[in-house]
Figure 1: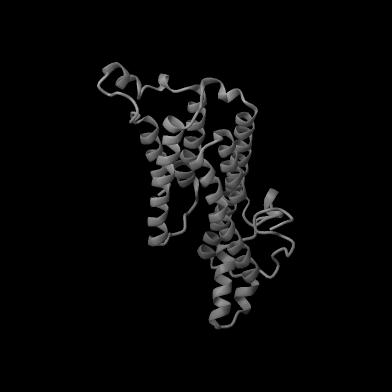
Figure 2: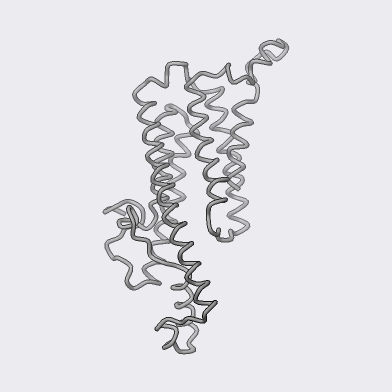
Length: 249
């Protein structure tokens, strides 16, 4: 569903501007030529595409498994990505003010640095989860193959709640590496930082600013729900661990 965003972004970024006289063949041709864009526009466009190429293609390929998604959530996400990709692409290529030398400005450089810090946090902690899931799946496969049971399974009753809890403990685990030591969802934190950095680099871009605000509005409640789920299903889950912002929330 996230593949919609870069595809829409590319279309809106490269489509001819409505403010150009398209009766002029030469102007019409250069309007979709990358040489007609400033270095600043190319950098901003590349940042957006780098994130979504990773998220919609590389992440999907590398993830050991992906949970099913509700149809309503899927449809809403597609609609959001259509609007978001189009509006940001159009703003960068047509409506925004991004002259050639803007990429040398302090705010632009700072925004790009913050973006890549957030992206590194996001990818690095995704990698941790991927590795733990692979190890967990290998362990489950071995237990099934050799009919190995742990102490909880040997002593468990036929009570449905006990069986359900045991299934959860088989499928899920508590990550503790790096920022997982402090928060339940460091990948969400990284993605939030990414889009804050992007909005700073794009300043002033209304679509990028709205996206930077929409990201925590979407991810923070999900992180809070994840923290709640862990605490309900794992009694040993660290009480001092926060949802998404270390030591705060």
